[in-house]
Length: 222
Image (cartoon, rainbow, N blue to C red):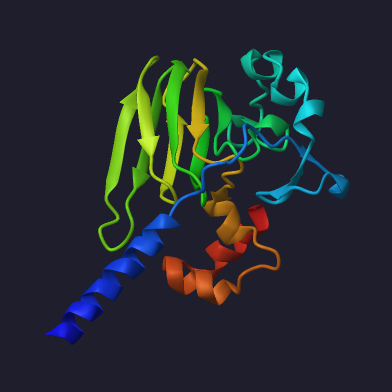
């Protein structure tokens, strides 16, 4: 009996230890504006920190014109994303958040994709979007809604999700908030058909149950 109690106690302690490291640690300083010079000595979340006394308001600023202006969506997808992350807003380093503005032409699509390091929510500012995500296997359950200005929709970390402008003649705009300073993105069609080097067509033919000529064509297109 004592042995059983000891085993259970150790298991609980191990679980508690695991849970303690299951999310990003809280920062132990107000901010860490990254610099490329190692002489500052403090290395946080993959970047060296600037001396806080040398930080400026510009380190925490991203110009509104880059967000508010309508972006060019004259591409095959009819979609453009404007990212605000640690790469162009240094003050986000260690804060665990970032932003994305989504511009859609009529019938524009943000294709199925995932963010490996972040959950996301979007707020529709203009137009009408069909948005959804698919749960993990084996359920592969689709959760989707038609969204109007002011509507909010949430996508869990790592799940495949998408947005589509259902309007024939009107543009759509949304703002996305993400729970990582560098959420990353894996766009499913590109990852599958545009990998470098290419995935063996036999793999994709079998996986998607397609004719090999279709797979060859898709790899050529992408």
